Length: 168
Image 1: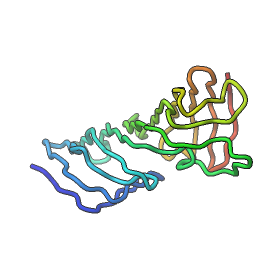
Image 2 (image 1 turned 120 degrees about the horizontal axis):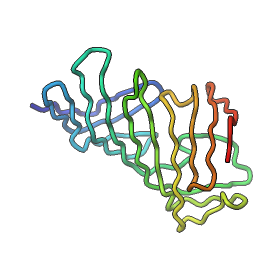
Image 3 (image 1 turned 30 degrees about the vertical axis):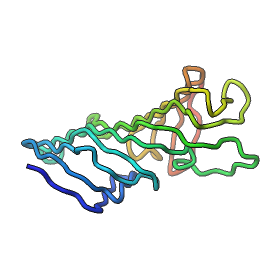
């Protein structure tokens, strides 16, 4: 069967999906979003994938969220002078990993300009892949960042306070 969602909201740790609309296919113990439309960080998002609910407490999550976002949708900081602007397409994967849900966000940053010293600088027309990986909630624990294989860093997050563990 199917379940139709109309203006529904889902919050998972610090990840809030609002205004969810569309259908979820019920396939045995698996819930399969059928191109659900939602809002994430105030921007249009499409949700696909599956959630297996066979055993209570051991749900298996494998979801993909697609949308156009600004880096500033996720991190707020003083930009004086302004060092980044624009929005780009992102793919956000949420996947069960032991008793955690791992978030992997990837973008080619097309549409984003960075006015930073080399090799961090880029024009809006130049693609540079950015990948961020963390366990939800991302503001508690290790966050891995890979910027176009030029700079890779591991930072520790503790309630919006970040420290660099290693960078290369």
